[in-house]
Image (cartoon, rainbow over all chains, first blue to last red; front, side, top):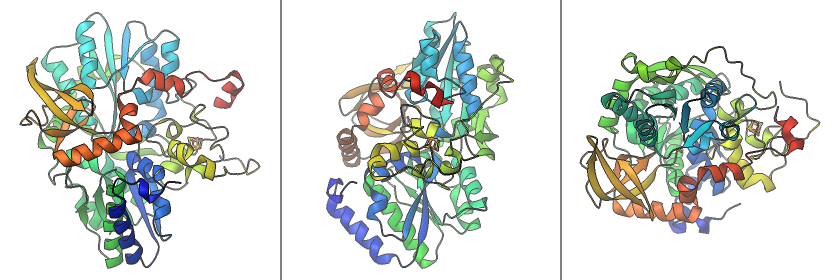
Length: 374
Length: 102
Ligand code: SF4
């Protein structure tokens, strides 16, 4: 457990906490959408510094975690083919597919390369005209514009041996799905700051109104989270449900217009399956018809893949905020970062990994004799 | 990957018809595409995600964030060797655990 003197500005943290403590009169459940926020919360013990009445529920905002197993398996299949250079961000290397991961594909001779930026993958394609270069395009509204720009550039420069395996996801439909779930306990949202840096806040007022839920745009540093919680609780106590921006240094109401225009040109909205959760309507992007030549699924036939999720893994419930990681029977026993059963234990933004890294010694996993999870 | 890091623009050049910059992230210099913030100037700070500048940031907030990330080891996570990190995380399973994976 961490202490408040480890905050960057302990006095300010103390004042924000005091304010929250003196405002709250009854229990509230808030969901932080972004996996980066989950890590900050657990790393700094913010949930333990808050009044008992304020519960933080961890949301589905980890791009690595929500990428469906089928897409991971398609990536593994494409990466294993001769003549292919498969490029990915580093945190996808250890995400378990059905029986293996990208790290193991490379060990078996696949040409898997890690890039810092999708433009690096495009450069690799330029330098290897006789090879097929595929980039693994996953992520939320923050990662989608860079990938969109890369495909746009490939087309503009006539680089034909470059394609994108796309599995992009969008936050607002996920919020909608969470609010519509019969088990939903969420009363307020800390919206993901960097997603809003790109998209602005225009998509949120309708959601806040329809579900009568405050949505506060929140950054992911410790003080940002406290400020987001403070503003959300204040609204709830006053019976309000508006959209508020607690991260103005990085979020303009209109977002980034150039990035949004590029997204609209390169992608089109589609239904998308979220790992562990299932299909959420309109919750993803795929390449639009104009860019079909650069769609890896179109270029490589990867149909008919048989996926197999480990039966013990309850990451779907974790991602929806229905279960805390340590309540999973496999947590810390069968499932650790070295032997992950689910992506939520692998990803640096996954909730299970956060609990394992920062809380393991304080938590006891569920007893082994408990009835098995179906 | 989801981490967006503030950095300072060192120099700007046009490459293949695209505005690119060298950006300093508390000591690590990376190439960054400025197409989404076309009027960003040398010396200014921006939030950079996977090699793209996405939003301007004032100098003070940028420096504070970088300092915090450095203390928490997050810059190492973002810019360190991903293969090494993946191997450390357990690239191959000890044989007795191989069965547990299923
Ligand atoms: S602890 Fe492991 S098995 Fe349990 S939900 Fe998390 S990733 Fe899945």
